[in-house]
Length: 190
Image (cartoon, rainbow, N blue to C red):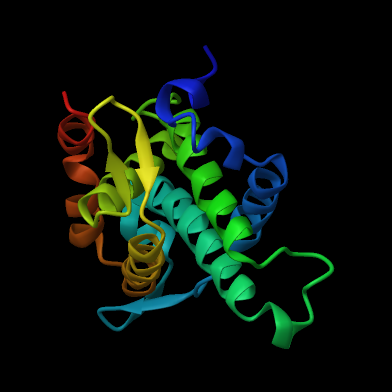
């Protein structure tokens, strides 16, 4: 069976959208440029890459994913003022498609494994979103999205990841990524 058929209920499978998948991937790539390129830590100029060391790539991939969602969420909420109606659907159905497609895509990325920056970055996001109640495991083993909690969790994780990079907080980044395997296994019902 395709991965979406195993992780989403039959009711949610129709919300999968190639357009939303593609749009989020585009937003992800654009968001790699978000954040300061030069930071000051301990009075010296450096970069997030230098300060976050071995966890930088995972944090950066998580940041690009979640800030891409945040940007799309913002554009959907402000589509009329931004005159985006002809290029970005912004109703409740489109919002639901975005989040359901992202959830299914999370499992695709997790298949890369925790030794891959995309896989580990997604594990960070999956754990955070599950802990915040945005991703909900059902008794039958499928997953659902709680849209109001998703919006809040996306905003909060965006803040946290951008702050880690902007401050070069290696210890905070290690804490966020350090127990990823344990948390992921626990969140998936071990």
